[in-house]
Image (cartoon, rainbow, N blue to C red; front, side, top):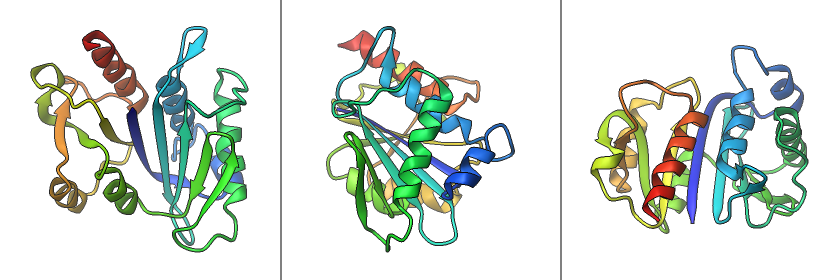
Amino acid sequence: MRAFVLRARSAPTDSKLLLASVGQDAHTEILAHVLMNAIFVAQSHREDIMVHLVLESTQDFSRTISFSSNDITNLSGFHEQAWLDKIAHALDKSVGMAKEQQRNVEPGIVVRTISFEKLVSELAEDYQLYMLDKKGDFIRDIELASNPCFLLTDHMPMPKKSFNSLKRLGAEKISLGPKMLFASQCIVLIHNELDLTL
């Protein structure tokens, strides 16, 4: 199983604000791009993929929306709006939830009111964590674990204090090269590297 976590620090947890933020400073379109590039291949979709989107611009609790490629049954199209609508629907389902609660949205999609830190500490129990960092080890120079979880951010970088807690959880820094890429582009390159080694 491969997992990807996108920490979207500027993404609103209000569905109307989220949809209104497409193409604006929050760049919420990146959420859809990440899902499409993580789950889909030409004329099909990947198996054994988990994607966790952590939306942090909130009045109460962060929202973590998790997508399981094995369980999603309603693939409503390979386009940005379809996946933004799914994210907005999950946010609507989360209204009124208390801290660290969970609700099923539809098959393969779950929304939880947990923070990035809490999510990653849970994932560290089952996955080897990899943090994308330009100063990390080049992905082709290391042997990736069979259960990798890749941690990415939107256009806002990871807070420095997060690096220490990630290090304590055993996260390793890896690089995909000298250029700073969009998270969705990173996912394509990671998939390709793993596909070549199988």
